[in-house]
Image 1 (cartoon, rainbow, N blue to C red):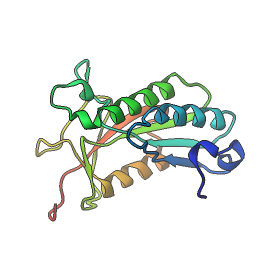
Image 2 (cartoon, one colour; image 1 turned 90 degrees about the vertical axis):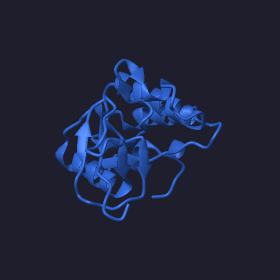
Image 3 (tube, rainbow, N blue to C red; image 1 turned 30 degrees about the horizontal axis):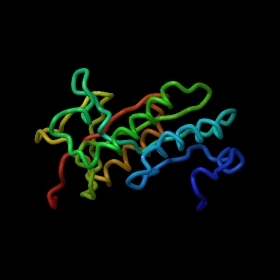
Image 4 (cartoon, one colour; image 1 turned 120 degrees about the vertical axis):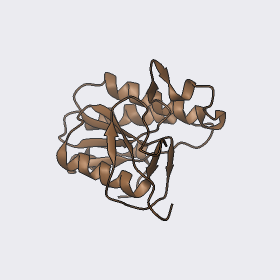
Length: 167
């Protein structure tokens, strides 16, 4: 199905076991992250369809501080990080839907699919090389494993991977 996410209806989604939202907002339109979250909550109410959200790393915590609020966080990514964080808070406050929010590492890029990943919760963490890195190939495996195994229902989890040989 190809359709504007804000035009999706309950009828569009209710026959699916899961819907994956990989919505990304254009620069200057980061408020849409909250709009999309609210819309999904509205259309998924009363369905058995699970929502899995491709989230961001900026809302991960280092102690009591969000990664996006640390001095080294790149300002260019701040609006997107704050948009993702608002959406996550909307999901956390929701009732009556089945959702999971998946945060990659701070460096999320194409990379070798190794089949190995480590998951965490809300806390920022790194791989064995000391990097907050997630390959897109392994992220997809983690996302689908979550759909199949339902380990993080109505919560966020995070994923880091090691770099493959070619990275």
